[in-house]
Picture (cartoon, rainbow, N blue to C red):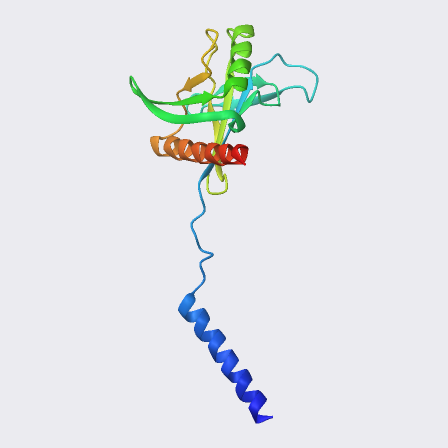
Length: 175
């Protein structure tokens, strides 16, 4: 019996030592991710066919939107923060399919608004309605640019998260 106990003690000591020496590498920092939903303004309809959202914090604008987004982060090619007169804007380049959808919606809905919702962070903990740009012309380039109701740090974090999601989506398509 003493032999078995010594083996067990030796095994336990080795296991404890390996845990202390090797450590655990499961504490790798979570990658920041982002989500984006672009909705189109619509006329109020029967319950469930539209919803009212308040966009902008300092001077809220109430917009009635279709509940399903017309564009999402799934079809983004590239996102960036760009300098504009008086501040910054977020510029989103959509793929060919979404660019076509963007062109159709902007051509058919001049004078209406987009309502843009963004989420960012490690687990999408931060999020809100960011902008309600007015559709003034047809956008055929697939490039959507808007000034967000966000700080520069929040915009940078959103863009970083969206670009991380874009990289993952593109890797998934390559496989």
